[in-house]
Length: 313
Image (tube, rainbow, N blue to C red):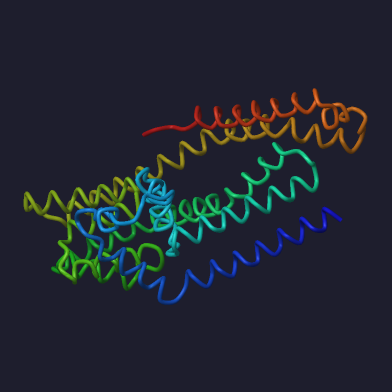
């Protein structure tokens, strides 16, 4: 009965949060978020100065710590233009649902807290997944966009006209991001500043080279077409090097995952084949403590292996 009650509570909370999230993240609110992002001032406005009459709350403390700012930037980079409060509400609901499910199944507060914390991170994991996929798609489109910009500049067009051609030829995400740059330039923002804002929305090192090239051309006055052409070759070389590094470290990364997941697989297999072997770990208090320590050490080993295999270039 407790399991059915917990499952029902989890389903109700998840459906409610899904409805709230989808209803608030569409329509006029989404358009206002895009316009606010597009019209971002050169200097950041101190929101707390405008709200000095209200006492400090937990939300303002988090904003001062740049936690909400960082989450908002991640959502922009992922192409999700909803409010941060909706994400926080969803995380809170998932945490409560996970805690109730853990209490119904295990009757252990620490395990329930772990399950709740794990479920509450699902929105962050989804945002990070969307962010990485979007940045990867942007990086894959960038060399071809640079070639098109180079051809347009060699044909005698201005940089703004070349960016308009890119917007018309490329789909999401590169086309929409450069469209935002043109809209910012149309309302009076200098093109260099608009490109710097683009770099904040798309923190790609290859795009940083384009921003530097435009600023150098503005200050020195050299041929931008030659700079962009050379930049396109550099970006392709960097992407080829990135793929080579991933190919060379693929075996080690897979070995790290195998080593990290092997204890879990062995424990699950013995739980099915010989349950008596795992009873002391699952039901004995001392065994449960050993199991928790093993889980923490296993996670630390996976994180350590991934950090060691991360190559900076």
